[in-house]
Amino acid sequence: MSTAKRSVLGKGLSALLEDHHKDLHTHAGEGVHQSKGRAGSINLVPVDVIETNPFQPRNQFQEEALRELSESIRLQGIIQPITVRMLNANSYQLISGERRLRASKLAGLKEIPAYIRTANDQEMLEMALIENIQREDLNALEVAISFQRMIEECHLKQEELGDRVSKSRSTVTNYLRLLKLPPQIQEGLKEGKISMGHAKALISIEFADRQLWVYNQILQHDFSVRKAEELGRQAQTNTVSKPAQIQAVAPEFRKVQDDLSSHLGTRVQIKVNPNKGGKIEIPFLSTHDLNRILELMH
Image (cartoon, rainbow, N blue to C red; front, side, top):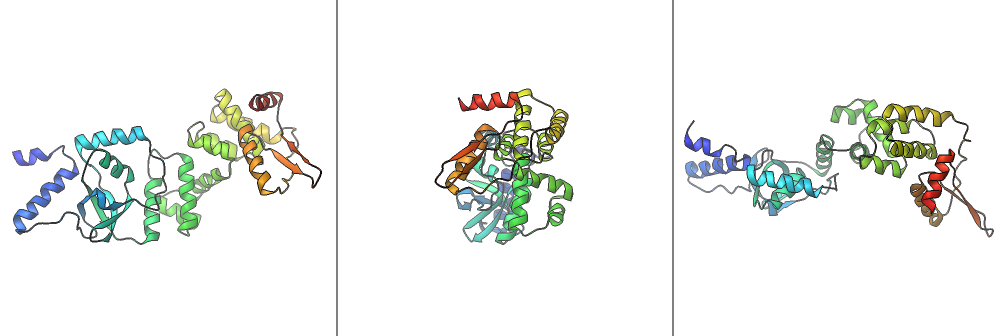
């Protein structure tokens, strides 16, 4: 292996592309503007002419992870190019790779290797969502939200969605059912307080107040998925009366009702009698559950 070839090893994709463009310049006898790539090619594109993807399904990026990636890029270069579409001669729009783009800017890079594609808005959204779903560090709720967006915004049926992301229809259905869980449980799943297995056990419980009770038991006692499933079956068949049909409440009371339900971890109902005041109902499933609610109310 020649010295010239050895010198580019370890520099990352950026260095290889840079040398490739230098070779083109030498052999063609004229400059190659690295940002004017054709569709289907990989080119070095200035970071300041790349717009972020308006269809990006992920809106949270951990700062520490970004700094670590930035340091890796600074030392090793870009290993995997981002994907963009050309808007005009001097403007591009990101399709996928926002973490790499952000980290590259953080590392002080002026250019980034990019795979240039042609795509309309519908294809942009679908590609961004699919790339997001395939991420290893995505939590179950983020996957569920991406699935829901693909169904609603890309007008796909569950079978078609399963084909797009290489998952069975039952798997897609299980993820979508997560979005029917109470907000407090969804937040716990998002924050890693419970696993997908715990969430599936909670989904099998019919009523929200019982779901919340089991959820809080899982958190307090660090129950396994198997224990959560057992507790879920008990909550389904216990002697607690079936929750009454929730009455329609005015919007100003609905927010208070929802906030109280989320805070107390149980389904709170506000019942209003015209010109006669009203009442707040807070159900509990056990003495322990009652004590938990009273502590939260202090």
